[in-house]
Image (tube, rainbow, N blue to C red):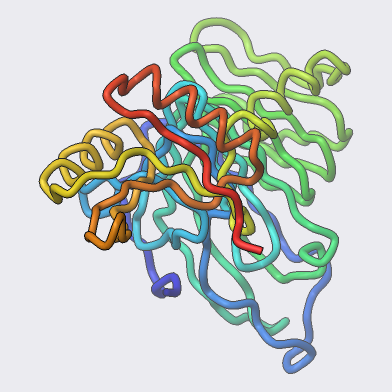
Length: 308
């Protein structure tokens, strides 16, 4: 499934724009354009994909497009990989929308263009070594600033208390109400725009900041992470009644867990079994067991090792 050419959504009340011009221009015909598609590579539940008003628990490999919104609750994390070799990491209690995303062309050839909205919460945008050569015009909106970024690593926060933008690599030009034409040219500095009070610019990033920010946006290995290459499976419950598994699967979906109803044979009879696939490790599967057992005492989950 691929991103369709245009994604339209209402402009969020919070707006921070990060524009990433070409870090190295491509000449026409010099390389194949990147594929138009964005997909989830890792998730730490609870998290949901909201499409056309309907919510679905996020699972690895899920495609994100056409005005879709990713939403996390307490403890949730999501990694979204964009087709031009960049990644958006979302922390807990975050809401993220993709209103426009399209493959375009200019005098330099194929160009990946888009707008991303951090409606609330925390994010980190990073570009891989390969992605630094891609031709892009990508904006990320959060807070009240319009940011033009010639960098590959940005961390940000948007909330009722205001917004924070940290430049970890590259340069930033900013336009905000009452503060047009500003520049941030020193990596490892940040700006804060509180909901009430004066803006603070060029505040140095200290090790304590980085430790805290990384913890807010990175998945925690062993804490219930599902990944695209995860091979561990968590079995939740088995029943001869499809109505039972359907009801429990709905409750799990509401809680942000991507369970599936599978068929198994037990003593020669067909049973329904709810499972969660793609746990990154045995520890991650066990961590989900602990979480689900607390929320759903009726279940007695167990871990199924990968097939050899």
